[in-house]
Image (cartoon, rainbow, N blue to C red):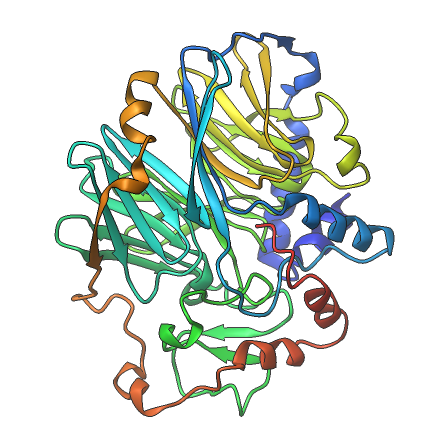
Length: 450
């Protein structure tokens, strides 16, 4: 088991090995390992709520065929994701009433994260953040050159700022909503997470150039990456989620490293869990708990206030549907909805599990098998009418988020405009990755799941 964990996450360093062993020890000591198969089915669970969720694309069945072919051919899943730039795909914002199944949907460009505060709904969509303000009937669109593949967005505790993950640049960014100004930045490459699974070093500045070092990519000009940033197969950490723990620290997951981190505003971090398989969410839970989504093991790991594991819940209530037989687990995210009620997005079973650990109750909510659902929130029905109907008819206001503090300034920022980078640099980087990683990245270039 330990060998499989190490191979899957590619953790060669002694410190990381120590963290993996520590995680295995923690999980082995947990006595509250549960399965949804042992929970009592309750078809009325959550009936007082409506779900609002993002569908990042509508090609999940086609993606499954690619993955099944890869697995049947004995291919490794060590390197997931493409290694070439691609256009953003069309996705959906969906509202579904749990009491009667009625749903409404709106098309939006590749939405991932979402959050709600009072009558404002924030959505991370491609390279921009969209705030739908139901009081103003206005959509505020926020853009910045370092916004790329935004995977999560959350309001600050006081509602004045937004915390986003720019996955394309492995960076957590915070900006003031009213002033449209960056207020905090944390880049994984500058904190020890700068080697991609293909063995390519990622730098955000410096004198090394790609042409002189084929195993190094310098990202000093975000405009060169056409609003997409580095593809999944080239990112060093592939940050999936960042959420406030409080106003002074935030929780973040590293997909490639299999880690869940706690980071403070000074940039100091510590690994809370390691040895995970492609983790996504690291979220506050009910009554001062936290939960981590161990995606490819199909488990929700619950932590106490001291980040000690105290419960593990496995999403194996039934076999995958016939169209997904033979595929591994893929639990996209587990999120706390309200008062101890959780939602788990189970991609290979085409459903969202609603479950309540305290009462051992569970409910299966079916979703379209073509939908790649990313995140979900619960909204009282009286708010949904304002938040999720006719949002596409709101007037739009575009805001440019500035970096007046120089938080994302690089050593050669003053000479950026004088240097022209080849437009096909990402493909060149993919060719330099070598052997097995190159083949894996090329065959999977159109099947990024994270």
